[in-house]
Amino acid sequence: MKLKIKTIFSALLPFILIISAYVFFTKTNTMTEQQLDIIKLSPYVTFLIGSVIALKFNRNREFFTLIILALCFIAINYIQANIGETSVQDIYSIICILIPINILIFSFLKERGVLTLWGLIRIGFIIFQLLFSYWVINSERRDILDMLNKNILAAKLNLITSISELALIVFFITFIILVIRHIFYKSS
Image (cartoon, rainbow, N blue to C red; front, side, top):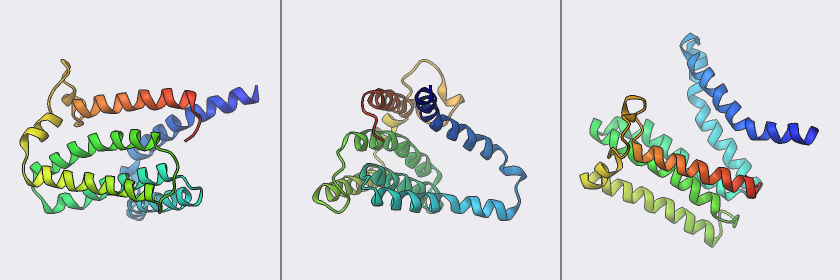
């Protein structure tokens, strides 16, 4: 009986955390300025603690996923201040595609260490994505950017969310693959 409760709790924990974060987010308008300042620091603390834990326990998949998330956070919060509004939407479209793809790719890679040849290859892969994204945005490759924002489904999802339909499909496919993988391989 205890094993079933533990299994159910471990399966529901990510959803409980997401719902809690949403409820917490909806209450930010009632917080003081000091509390909001602490919240603004929380991504940095999360990335730092998560990276240290991932390195300590040799969990390079999580480490590289945190690196991707940190780079996306930087792109959304700092780069957009220096570029035009059109480029902000382009960066957002690219990020919405890259996050689930990277999580999926890194979830299938073996734990081989961060400062090894395999770790350097993964760092190179991340740098390649940064350079490719930079090239797509600065060369104004509208064909690639339009493909990322193209409406695929009959439903008008842009009324509900600002995430492109292609990104939603990629998120959904990634979610299904990771759930199936988690059922068969109880790793991360």
